[in-house]
Length: 64
Image (tube, rainbow, N blue to C red):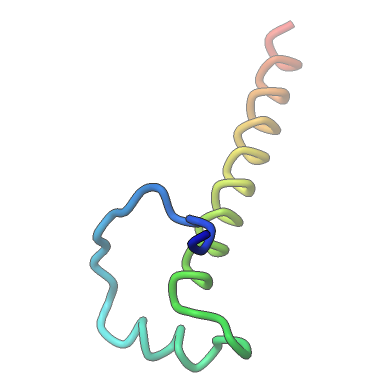
């Protein structure tokens, strides 16, 4: 069997100059840029979902 497929979607991204060098400086042992970027995107998604939920909850309390 081949290795497990971990990325099902791809998207090009333009990053500010120097960003990849900063990422490379922070990579852990055996960690790839892709691993780092996937983890960062997942953290941001979770944070925004939590923020949206908190905002919707406070709006609901204020309205009724």
